[in-house]
Image 1 (cartoon, rainbow, N blue to C red):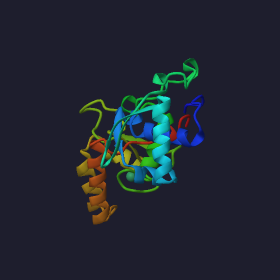
Image 2: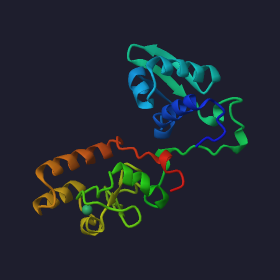
Image 3: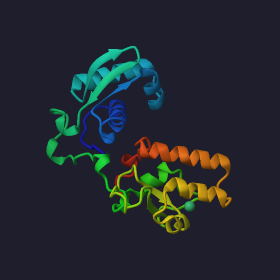
Length: 209
Ligand SMILES: [Zn+2]
């Protein structure tokens, strides 16, 4: 994403990780506990501690506070990092909350990955090149093309749901034998998470898809 970030590779992956969990999801800072961070990056806790300090020294991040639960870290945008980057050649990172997932088909792979390669409603396998995109809350109610309202579906669900309420539609699939009781419970839970903004697609992995 930032080809000109001239820091060592291990610090660079740490920075990307911190960036993905802050700026890419619309926040500036976040508490990072060292143990899960070390695990996510497959390095030791002392390595992570050292690399966080290095990134802080370089001005890529700011350690705001050290608490029992971890480091409160503010992550700077590449454009805000002095001297580390030649600023002209760096593309602005994308603010995910403003991405139009319905019109911008190029992010469909990120949605596919979030949905685990299956229709959000009936759980049948779908493909990125042929799947449909559906508004959880229909367009007639409110115009929301964000990741909180756009899901990958099969064509049957897309055309059968129309303007129906998503929860009612899921119950209909259950009554029709297309979802087990466990599936229905899991789908209703996924719907809740989606609406709460907890299901954030990772668009950094599919920059030009
Ligand atoms: Zn379906």
